[in-house]
Length: 264
Image (spheres, rainbow, N blue to C red):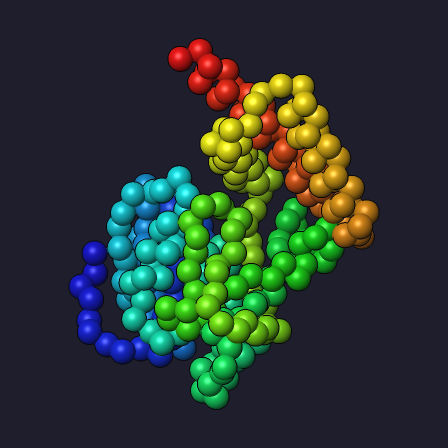
């Protein structure tokens, strides 16, 4: 761990990482030179994530890789000393417009304690404009101590004390450099959903399968028709289909867990 220096920065960046050598340099380059502090909590990456990050003079805290990744994100936030915190994922990039807005808010001050930021998502070689993936607002910029991650689910939003404003500049999100990477993340997310179903006391029967099936139908048509995924072409079709299949895949994994639990 890099030795901490006692400072009182204005803006801290908080990241949690795990095997992000393909993304971390691009992310850190987007904040280099205009933030006061960068805190990275790394879940014992087996690649060069920590080595690459250290070249940027950041503070790296090594820990275990938690099943709920937001636990490490919150740990990074807790380690920040800044009056303001910008929480990023390693596969995100801060656009120039967003950078200017953030610095303007800090300079002028704000009655709001946090801000929604629109996010552009890159999938199968293009930015999704529809498919329920734009503007994909996320709360990532907030006053220290005024926002916290519940650390219960992978897709949860930060909870905020007080008012929430909105910014126009974008976070550029590169979550899936290839479809294989998309499937790897999908495998992890469906396993988490399966565990949540088991924890909630769901029973593996025909009725619960039908609920999963109808969620599949609903999610697909919601993204492809209501959210106009068809305007995103083939990537919109595939994203809509696999978003719906999340429910079926998670149910099959839940069924396996339920049977295993019942046999013990």
